Amino acid sequence: MEQRPFSCGLDAVLAVLGGKWKPLVLFHLNGGPRRFGELRRLVAGISEKVLIQQLRELTQDGILARTDHQEVPPRVEYAMTEFGQSLAATLVPLCAWGDAHRAEIERIPRLQRMSA
Image (cartoon, rainbow, N blue to C red; front, side):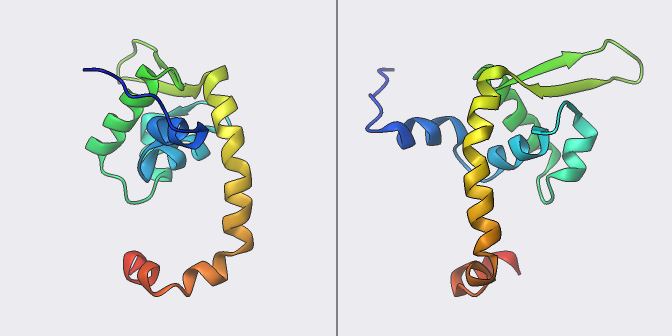
């Protein structure tokens, strides 16, 4: 399959981050490595299946590093790579904007239905 060129930088970022869950996973990994179970608790609303899929894609894309400690019970940690940290840094202004405008966002009718 032929890859189409990205029309702009935002198009490239969205190709990596696409969807609701990946930015939230990166947000929770910004403080350092986390175990799978921690991420499942921190990323509210995500199913185990979807979390596994998102972590796998982020790892394949070089955004995350997965460490399997080969222990019983299994202990697997995820951490951001240097490439992932550079991407996560771009999310900080978005988080700040969301915090600054949270009240206005919560009044948007379309979004009220989504959070109910």
